[in-house]
Amino acid sequence: MRALFFYKMDYIKIGIIKNSHGLDGEVKVLPVTEYPELFETLEVLMLAKETEIVKALRVSSVRQHNEFYLIKFENIDDIETAKKLSGYNIMYPANLLPELDENEYYWFEIKGFKVFDMENNFVGELEDYEETGSVEAFRIKSENEYFLISNNPYHVLKIDKINKRIVINRDGLISEDI
Image (cartoon, rainbow, N blue to C red; front, side, top):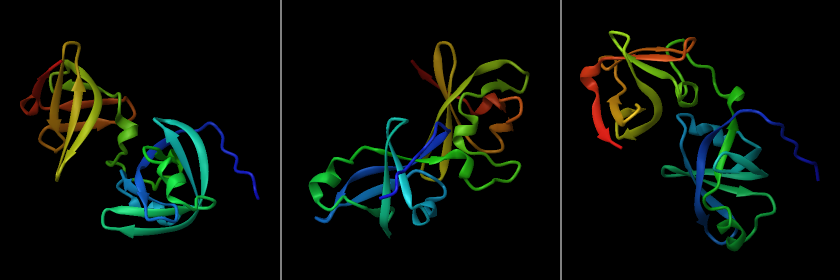
C-alpha cells in the first residue's frame, strides 16, 4: 500500500457526502461545484469536517446518479462503514481548479471582499451567496444588518479581484435584520 501525503494548501469544498448507497460501501455525494465532472477524474478524495481535512481516501469507482455521484472507496466495503462518512465535505486543491476567463471567478476568491456603492460608500463585506434556481444572490454583512443583492450586471457593477472590492447599484439591495 502506498502512503498518501498531503501538505497544507488551500482547498475548496466540491461536494458533500449525503449518505450511504446500497450495501457494498458506496456513498452518495452532492456536488457543490460548477465542475462536477471533477469527480470522474479523481483518484483520491480529501474528506473534511467543516474545512479541516481529516482523511484521504482512494477512489475505486465513480458513477453519476441523477444530480448525485455514487462513489466507492477502496477498503470501504459495507454499509455501516459508508454511513460513518455521511456529512463529510469533499475538498479539492484550489490551485488545480480549471482556469477561468478574466471576468469570471470562483466563490472562494471573492468571499470577504469589501462592497461599495456607485458613490464609493462602504456597504459591507461579502459574506455568503445563495443559489435559488437560476438566480445567484450575494449576502452582504454591514455593521448592523445583512443585505441580499442578485448577482447580475445591473446590480453587481464590478468585481475587482486585484483590489478585493465589489461595486454595486444600491437599487438592488434587499435588507435583512440581524
